[in-house]
Figure 1 (tube, helix red, strand yellow):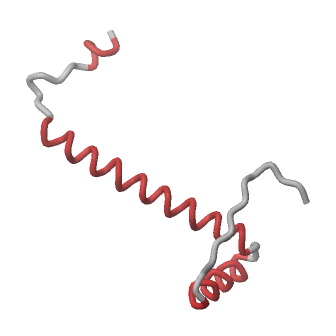
Figure 2: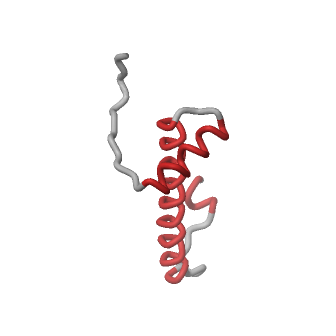
Length: 75
């Protein structure tokens, strides 16, 4: 079966494989679909953490005196 999506081979420890298999069976999806969805969720969580950390550092240097108003930015 040809596909345009890249493929990834992953080696899992037995307990991790069994947990993934259980979740896939519970949701009635293939192992690869469940793995893809879990990886997607993990990446989104990682990205959220990155942006939260970035926002915290920017918040420390924020000043109302030097900030632009909505009207100054958008006209």
